[in-house]
Image 1 (spheres, rainbow, N blue to C red):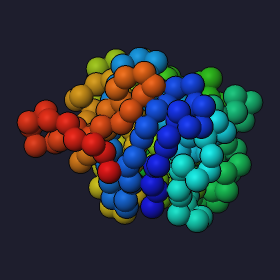
Image 2: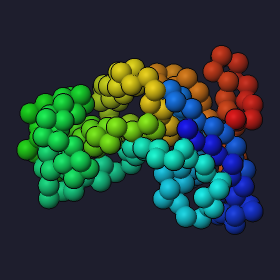
Image 3: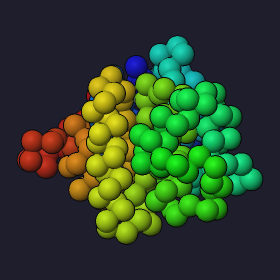
Image 4: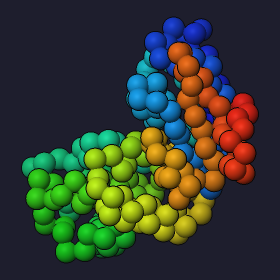
Amino acid sequence: MLELAIDGQAAGHPVLGTLHARIAPGDRICLLGSSGIGKTTLLNAIAGLDHGLPATMIRRRPGLRIGYLFQEHRLLPWRTLRQNLALVGATPGRIETLLAQVGLQGCAERLPDQLSLGMARRAALARCLAVEPELLLLDEPFASLDAPRVAELRVLLAGLLDARPEMAMLCVTHDPRDAEALANRRWQLLGTPATLVEVATGGTGAERAAG
C-alpha cells in the first residue's frame, strides 16, 4: 500500500532523518513521540502535503485513497455539515449514513460553529470516510477532549476500523492508551533529526527497526 524510504539528511529536510517502514492493508498503527519531534510532519509527508521530500522517498500505490483527520476540523464554517460532506462527493443518502456512523444523526443542517469540539471531530471524521479511504491518517484525534469524550471517540474509531478490515490507519498520539485500544502496530519517533522505530506489542517494550 505505502512504503517509506526516507533519507531526510540527503533531502535536506529540517525535521525528518532516516525512516524506513511499510503500511499494509489492515494495519492499525499508532505513532508516538515527544512534542515537536515530527509526528505531524511525517503525516503531512505521507499525505503529500510536505514538498521537502522527493516523491521517490514515499512510495504510494497508484490511486491510493487517503483520508486525513487534521488536528483542526477544517470544516468550512459557512456551510452546513450536509454541504461540507457534499463538497467531497457524498450523495444525499450517503451523507445521512455517514453522519449516523459517527453518531451525528439529525445534525446535517448544523453549521460547524454550532457543534462541540468532540462533535466537530466526528463530523470531520465523516468527511474523511466520505472518500472511502484505504488509508486513514489521524493527527491527535483525542486532543483537548475530556476523558468521557475520549473514551467515546476511541470506541467509535475501533468500531469503524472493525467494519472496514482492509482500511489501514496511522494515528498520531501522545497517549499509549490509544495504542492499546486501537493499534496492532506501534511506531515511535526518536532523536533529532527524527528516526523511526517500531515498538514491539508483545509487552516487552523492546524496539526494533521499523519495516
